[in-house]
Length: 103
Image (cartoon, rainbow, N blue to C red; front, side):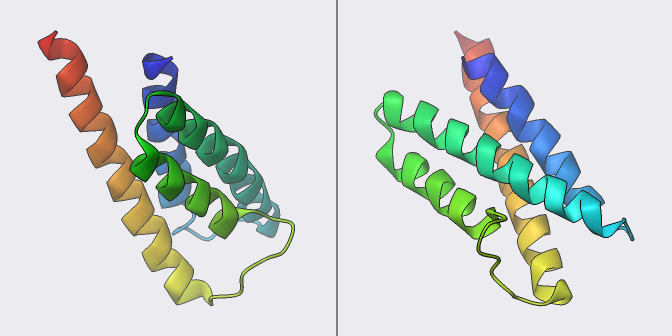
């Protein structure tokens, strides 16, 4: 399960960084839907591992990115959010990978 989570974190980070480029509007909708699913899954896995702080953080990200009731922040702020979340995902994946390889 942790390997799947690591892959999803890295794929989601790349998808969020691609949002910085000029993409068709449909791409952003797909990313929002994918973020809802991926962040919800990751939040569930952290809750299952008894890490409620990370679980709540990822559930909050799922709510922020969900496509049903869009939160209007403006392109510049969304770009900052995308970069911060992508860097956080990569950082968290690196920490988990290091812990996994140390075992």
